[in-house]
Length: 148
Image (cartoon, rainbow, N blue to C red; front, side, top):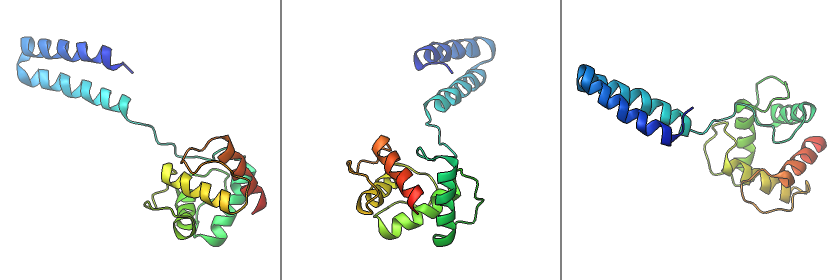
């Protein structure tokens, strides 16, 4: 993908060529195509699977726990994808202060609630409730997965 500093001159060139060759309609098409490329470069990628440092076996433990307690109906495949996280968010919403939607995306608020669970549930997390899944959060999440 092109950087913004490379893309802007291309937009200007596209506009100039469009006007010279076919009027405003062609220039608009060049602008639209370049804007779509720029937007795609700026949009953050959402990962379909987020295990936060768990091995496949540990993630399977979590999925079994979610299946038994939180309405998880997906496969026990060791990949914490959106359906796993939706089930986990139901737990986090009920007990650990998760304020967001049950959307299956383990974003900042999901991680904060997970950190509260890991800290208050005595799984070894002693860091800040900051929504950053650093090594302390990951180590405590592994302890949780091994202990459930």
